[in-house]
Every structure is written in structure tokens, then in C-alpha cells.
Amino acid sequence: MAGWRSILVSQPCKLSVKNMQLVYAPYEGERVQVPLEDVTVIVIETNQATITTALLSQIAEKNITLFSCDNYHIPNGSFIPFHQHSRLSQIAHLQITMKLPLKKQIWQKIIMQKIANQSAMLKKFQKENLQLELLKNKVKSGDSENLEALAARKYWHLFFDKFTRDQKGLDPRNIALNYGYAIIRGAIARSLVSYGLLPTFGVFHNSELNAYNLADDMLEPLRPMVDMIVKQLEQEDELDVNLGVSVKSALINLLNMQMRLNNEIVTVVTICDIMAYSFVRALKHNDVDYLKLPEIL
Image 1 (cartoon, rainbow, N blue to C red):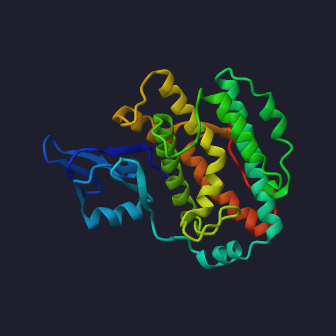
Image 2: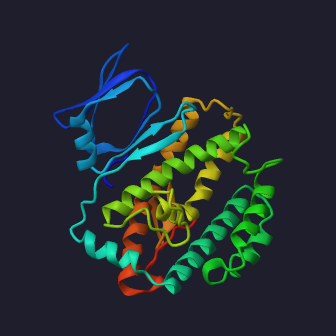
């Protein structure tokens, strides 16, 4: 993904395209134009925005992820490009016929990296992380002992005070976490589609009601990056149940933050592409070692 701008649309407006420029025309205020090639993500949180079909077409052509939001301004849908990969059928066949042992090995690797990243995040905020350090190398194939859940309980207890991931509550930290996870989930789905993968078919997540099972699988090692932003926002006393523009902007900008992958420092949005590409290679070679996952700096 070549773009680097993330755009949050919160005011009533019309969105169109002219001369390969995204044209933002608010009902009150001045028009703004941004080169489409610079755009990574567009989040439309107002229900009083209109968008032209010409712009939608260009969004697909430029591999831009477009999010809609619900009445609570949380992303609830994404518009991603139709499959453009030249070997879609071949890759889709490999994905659908993936053997169970490879699925279990991939999930094991994902969970090991997730726990390692959670441990690194605890260390970053000077929290005791010995329990997760001990768990991260004990994950078995398919995470048969469900160490992910055990690590999560220990992690959340240490990371936030008096906190639970009960999404029914009105804890602003949960609201912010869900917002951030949704943004990265959409970026991952875009990358998966770009490399000919079908986001519906996951290695662990397999709900028939979920169109993004594979994206949810690949999201796991990236979740601690969202946690970090929310923790920082909490420390700066920026959080409330009505997420402000500055909070949303910080969470969307997470895509431009950096992690380590293959001993290189790259942005999260680039990592989404690399993970998707490496997943295809793991499928082709039937070898989990080809799958590349990011580490916390």
C-alpha cells in the first residue's frame, strides 16, 4: 500500500474525485483536495456524507480501505477492492484445501507472537511481565491448551487497572480498543484480498457469520499496538465514552506507526501486506516457517 494519509470524515459533506484528487466538500466550510495516491484509509463517521460512484471506483483501483461507522461512530463496515490478483483461483484453492496440521502450526505461531508482543508491551509500560514470558514458549500446536486465554487474563489484569474486556460495558478503554482493532482488521482484510486470499476462510476463526475470519486470525499479533495507543491516551486523560477526534485520529494513525519484521523497521500498514504475502508463501510451500509476523520495537 503506497499511501500514507489516513482521513477521518466527521462533518456533513460530499466526497468526490477530480483529476485523481479526493475532493472533500463540507456543507459548511472550504473544499479540500488530497491526491488519491497518498491515501491509505478513509473513515466516514458522519451519516450525512454522500460519496460518488466515481470515487468508489477509484478507491478500489487505488487499494484504499473505506470504513463506514455505526451510530456510536465505531467502524462497522469496510469497502475493500474486488480481487485483483492474477492467480486468485489457484491461491483460493490452496487456502480452502489447507491441511489441518498447517492450520494448527500457523495458529501456534500467531499466538506465540501475540503473547510475546503482549509481554513486550507490559515491559514498555514498566509492568511485571514474567508470567507472559514463561507462557509464550509453551504454546502447543493449535494452542491446544488455550494459553491465549490464560495469557490474556494475566495481561489485562496487569496492563490496565480494574479492567475487563467485557464489551457490554461503557468503559472508554474498551470503546477505544474496539475502534482501533476495527481499523487494523480492515487494513489486514485489504491486504489479504490484494494477494488473492479469501478473508472468509480462517485458520482458527471459522464463524459462518464472519466475512473476515482470516483477518481476525492475522490481527492477533497486532492487537498490542492498539493497546499501547489506548494506554497512552488514558495516561494523557484523553479518553471518554464519546471518543473525540484526537483519539480517533491517534487510533487511525496507528497504521503509520512502526514495528519490527524480519529485522527491519516498517509501518503497520506495510506489515499487513507482508503478512498476507508470507501467508500465501506458507500455503504454497506447506511450511509455517514462511509466515512472517511482527514484533514490538
